Structures are given as structure tokens and as C-alpha cells.
Image 1 (cartoon, rainbow, N blue to C red):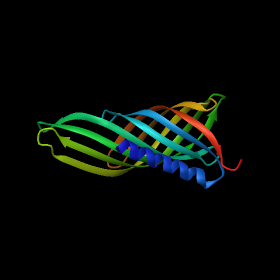
Image 2: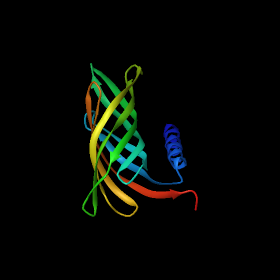
Image 3: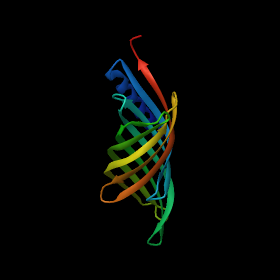
Image 4: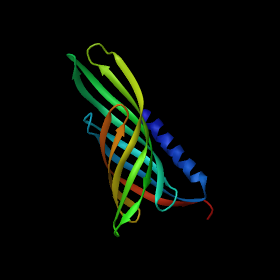
Length: 173
């Protein structure tokens, strides 16, 4: 149910981008993501709006699946939802590759559940994102990979590998 709510939010954001101007380039992305700091795997959904040929901005939703951790002789299940707003600056290198630095902000909701006494701990915090990505220039479907850091009081390392579908939307045809 939560995934449905987050997907609807992503679609509403995409619709907002489409309404800004009659003709725009949009990308819808899906990817596998790994948080190397917490050793969590997840899935990433995003929508990016191209302001021009070099600059895009977008909203991303990451779902990190529950993992079991042990601390102070107790077993915990830890999971997270992560919401990002990032900006990419696209630089073509040759005919087939584009690299891009990225920056943005994110907000992470974490849930920690004690397996023994069912105690729940919820926490949330903002992060600053910085990193880089590379994508293969094909017509519409574009494989990509990103490595980025999210930093606040601590720094977390992420690797994302996915595929994008780009299209132009012209409302007034």
C-alpha cells in the first residue's frame, strides 16, 4: 500500500513537470540501489525533468528493504524510505556516453523494530547529496549508474544501477 502511495506521488510530480510547459523532455527511471554504509539493498523510482540539454532535475523515491541487525544482545529489523530531489548536469563524452555530476537533498525515514519486545523506533533526517553518474546514450532506453554520498552527521555511500526511459511530451500538437 505504501508503494502505491509513493508511486502516485511520483506520477503527480511527473504530471506537474508536464504542466510547466507544453513541450518538455522527461525521463522515468527504475534502478537497484545499495547503501554500502548500512549494507541495505533497495529499489529506486524516479522522474526527471530536463530544463535544457545539459540540466535536469528530479524527484526520487528509494525503498530500502528490511535487514536484520544485532546490537546490545538484541535483534532488530531495520528498513528505510528515502526521498531525494537531485539536479544533474549532463556532459557528453563521445557519441555514446554522458557523465553527470549530481547534487541535491534527501530526507530519510528509518524504522527499527526490536525482534524480542516489538519496540519500534522511527527516525528521520535530512541529507545533502553529491556524486556522479554515467549513462549510455541510446535512443529512448538508457542504462545508467551512479555513485553518490549522502552526508549529515554521518556520510553514507550509495551505488545505483538502473534504466531510464526518456520521452518528449508535446501537449499542443
